[in-house]
Image 1 (cartoon, helix red, strand yellow):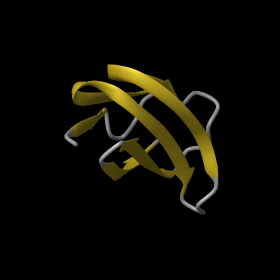
Image 2 (cartoon, rainbow, N blue to C red; image 1 turned 90 degrees about the vertical axis):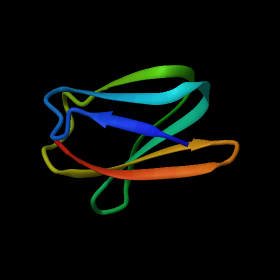
Image 3 (tube, rainbow, N blue to C red; image 1 turned 120 degrees about the vertical axis):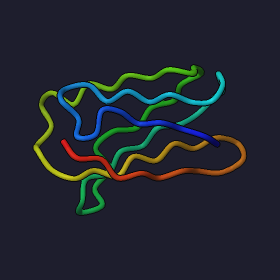
Image 4 (tube, rainbow, N blue to C red; image 1 turned 60 degrees about the vertical axis):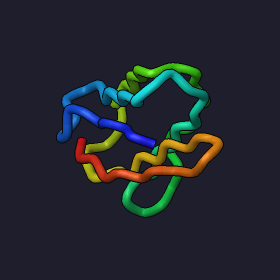
Length: 75
């Protein structure tokens, strides 16, 4: 699965672009491992608002039927 996360560092909105439209689950964990966000999508472009979250490092996991990709972002 080919994904792009931008901007990094995140200003207020994290954009996720997939190589094609598909069903995915996006899960975000803070640096302590606590899940702070999780949602299902059927899209090629996803936007997640970070306003209200604490500044710091987060792990973003995007899962589809074939596996998962995890990337680190800074907010």
